[in-house]
Length: 321
Image (cartoon, rainbow, N blue to C red; front, side, top):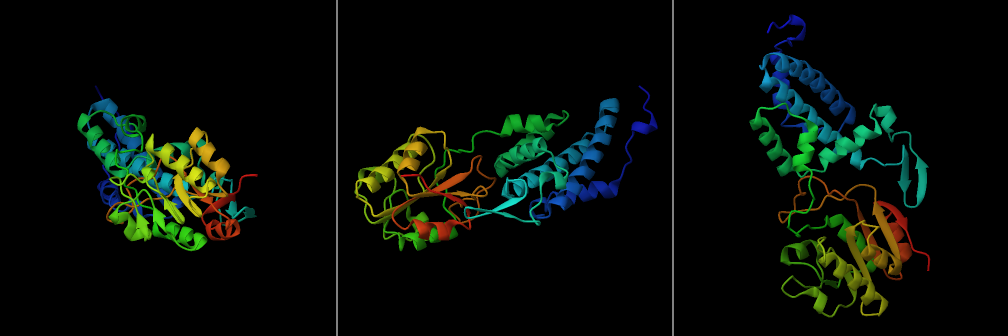
């Protein structure tokens, strides 16, 4: 089959080298316009080589590198977009809304809501799985698509590992609010190096069966049914006076019965503006980002203290009593 020169992409070795090198530092780019420009450049490059590949069966590596650079750029944009306020440019501070000219709107960035959702879907894939699936797609020698990537890799955030450590600055806000942390009933030695509770229970101790006391911090396993048991327990133990105060960090699964039960008994709730990046056993951020946002619920009489301390993280609400 004859191939016209109009559909044969230019063999731009310089651009190929740029894309190859870019993979190493895309995750470090913090300017969304810069990463958007890279994405658009890669998109045009990929489109050109895809046409050539469909016509000749040649140029797979060039087409794939353009697509990979594009999808890695979209992943980074998704990460940056997930950290932006999702309120059309209105910044939240505590419970107040402040208009901030420095907070960009999607329309200002030239990004549609559908694109934003798609980019954040890609960002939600944990990094190891994301890289693995890209390599698997490369080995098929078929035209790569983002839909195929998402279908294969975008699964539940749960990996079967419940060791997700809370960033220290959040623990410190809870400590400041309660005046100290006496107990962490769902912990381990490594986690308590960050929490610094006076006493902690491990999975072997089965904190659900132990007596709780004082000021409690808890980052429970997020998997069912354990999460339901811990959330109900902290609410009940505060209500019956077994503990003085409590702070729990959990997925903001507001539609679930366990969240509704706990929220109805707590004193205040913080909904962080972005998804919290938890730490691993090496105190490094977990790859990827959670598929769901989080909430921090407070039980106690120091509601004003909680509001003042946690408003830097996001919106503060308190149930009507």
